[in-house]
Length: 283
Image (cartoon, rainbow, N blue to C red; front, side):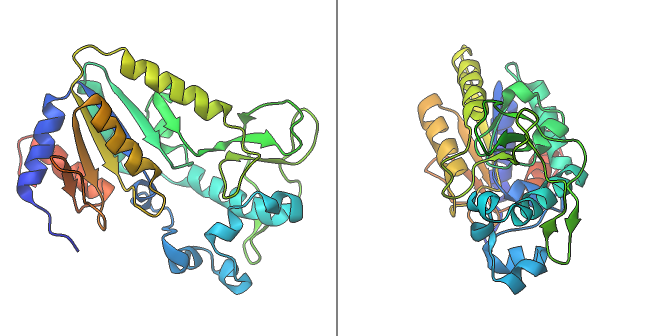
């Protein structure tokens, strides 16, 4: 475990106080503090989903579009359960602290996340300022490419047999052609993912970024690890290209490029510690 440097917490608070634009970059660790399962390694995944251990299936094996062709009940058992869970889980207080910081910024905030749970929008962040780089569980696409595009997923939960983790009929269907639907989520080895929604989000983010004059940017990165480094690389590239300060909150991997701020704290604990300094207290 890395020690937490109180001086770095103070530096982070000062960077936020001086900034006029905030980007929140979030990985899987952001959701853990809301009580969502930690899929880091097979043991964490199997602890959350014991039936899959008996079947010898890990997260990577299940997060594969082939299941929608091979065995749709397995596919929707996995993604339907996650969708039900994400919708039923309350976003932790750190989301609301970040939202409060955003409201103090002249240019507001944007979000870049690899999470597919939709929790930033549920916590009040403007949908037009969120980039979901791997898609979102609340949107579907047709497995038969009928031209329906990306559309909002059903409001009702998917019925799951939790002893087998198989979804029960009726499985989600395309509203246009009636074929099997799938989540608009980028899976492993996924050549069928429709990326238009994420591309539009990215274009809006870039327009927001380019429209600022005299930008003083702070990037607060929460729970993004190196196993799938999409979010970490984004944060580092953004700070290199646009200037500003990176504040990385990561219990296990807080290392940062020279001159940036890395805190060995989880998302919620880190945001709360910084916020306490901003309010004039001690962490």
